[in-house]
Image 1 (cartoon, each protein chain N blue to C red):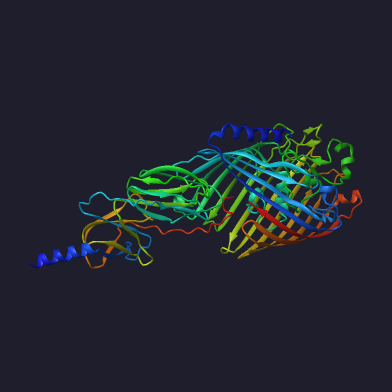
Image 2: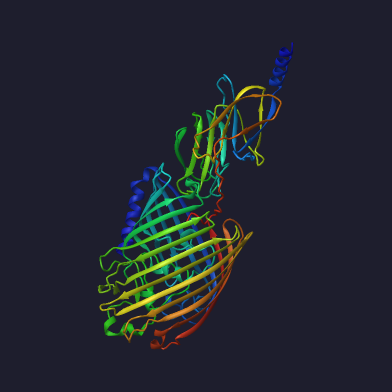
Length: 207
Length: 410
């Protein structure tokens, strides 16, 4: 009887969808900001990426956002808001490409059909560094300053994946199988996470 | 002249050659200036004044007319050109830079690129704006006034870079090496006129007036023209320079260069009246951002130059500046102190080359819109130049100038 009730409860929760609160901590047990988290349902079927493209902009000689998470097969545009050219490239396994981008001259979006981490650079401004994380899920988020993220999903069994740009090997995604219910979740990453270094760049630093 | 024609040719041919995938970025700047100068005629007009302007310039003049081309030739190839229109001392149009850049995309964390053609070595941190102009003061430091008038790489430069971000490090390093032709008369102005304070860049097809130098009437200097053609090749030898850039978080930027034009002082081009000067120097530049608004820029130049057989002319030169710049909203205020000195180390009594001086320059710029900028600058300059006496001028003079600038860019 109890089993049936639990199933009914899970079904209801699943049908309505709810927000799973997750906290990511580093190996020293401190909250880890800017971690990418996503949930993949066990025995998951193929995911459908939205038709509308995502955007990875270049503004004031930086990638905005620094980290973009997209579902597999998503389209991504690369609008350049600066008055100078950017030469965006990636040599990552998940997507190798190069684009010369000018203001108000958009190029066709690129489809990211392989999962994995795509590291972006600009051949002209070598301090520009950005990431597109292509995931096999539509349930994903980036943790805030308190290491917290909210994932809109249904209850059930999932694989939690966690990635951070401070990993020494950025292709090394950590995963853990877990049951998502009403309780808050917590995950402690195993790898060391290098601190993000902030650079004081401005318009005269190309020289 | 030959260099100018060659550069123009290379520039145009490369554009045509790669024209299939042509994509150009064209930017421009027009700057108009009203100046209240002093009575000392500018060196540009054959006087002993060390500013670009004098009382003759007390009317509106075109101080900068710049067209900057950046043509995308292929994935890793681009062509760059800077065309300058000037009206002083004479109306003229010419290139100050024209080069091809090869910057391959590479999977390596180290990056490299090569420039070939005519361009500035990136020694200074004062002139990062379009067409090697300064976003800080209108009148360049003594060091960069000189580099702008007498120094330009006409050759090949290679840079290997270790970008900080690719190594998750706070430090970036660049290693630069170049070899070049031309630049044999470089050093001429320092010997006879001394350092100056201005923003008049010499185009590849121009010469610069040396001013009234009595010793040029002497038998030993009879071949020397009254105008220096700084980018000429005289001795057929290659010059070289090497530099290191070290950035810490882009907050501190440090550049050190050693330059040697490897001139053969015994050679002279009799038809153009240009000697080869053996000019070599070290330059150290530092930029430090206290925060996003306030920065300090400093540079130091120390070198020697020699011309003529048996060290007919042998001089040491030295200059430094310290500049403080603060940006508050649409306002930028920059104040700079310059010191400069030329020491005469030869025994040629009829040709004294010693000079020294110092200057203070204060500039306020107001950004009206993205395209329009207004600005005011005041500058004062004291100089002592030994050879002025032989031409009937006071050796020691004080100069001042005030200017209003309006600039439009696209």
